[in-house]
Length: 180
Figure (cartoon, rainbow, N blue to C red):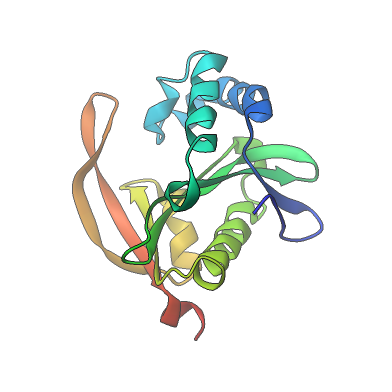
């Protein structure tokens, strides 16, 4: 999946090492906003950190590879979205995303999550897609709720961030739910 056109304004592109500068610059310019909910922001202090992240994804082989995409809206970089920690034996995956502030409120993530969920079910053969959201991150939690994912409960202390453990809300969508 090299390129996914969602609509006339929104497209996803498989992340490449050549995109490291634009991804890092977006993180660096929006650091104060992004660091509230994203633990990796504090460790992403130089472009080399972003290059290492992308190289780690690109070097993954076969089915073990995470599917990470840059998000483009009206030809401008907007954020990242991807399928990660895919369990091919049990046909399940997790969807994660982030968006820079000026791109919020345009339906970008809702449309991208919907499209990637559909691809996970139809092209990748998944039975379950889940989204984990830090408790209190209402904007992020609104996405799976809007797309009729089921709230399953709370993963207590599921993420270490800002020197403490944060609880995570777990949302899931099953193939049978998506195509109802």
